[in-house]
Length: 167
Image (cartoon, rainbow, N blue to C red; front, side, top):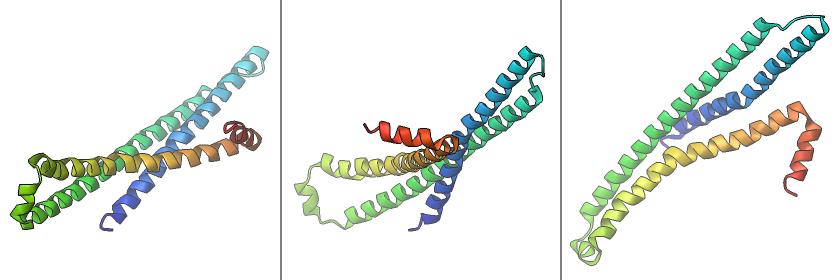
């Protein structure tokens, strides 16, 4: 609960980063179309390639990918901070709990088992929070975003793909 706002910010940055990555190829497709149409016009003698338009598209796409990388970096930084704080709290709580444990517990439990519970389990939680949570968010947003982009390009082909792929 304490990190709810941070995780919400991570979710927003994940959406922004993934959306930029999904929208980039569409912009590159517009540049490719403009280049093709210009070359066809040159071949027919009715026009030329609009390099200014293509350059604007490419610069905007570059800015989009840079923004995506920045959002992704911020997302990773926030989640690393959240997971480090949670790990610290867990280790502190474990230490306090172990200091309250009776000596008989340590006599009956192997040294390796005690250390394993302290270090490995907390490290697993730390890795899960810092990597898996952001991967889950990014993966879900990617699937939804790609479906939206596919529907915006051609809803018939998208429905066909959604029916054929499971078969």
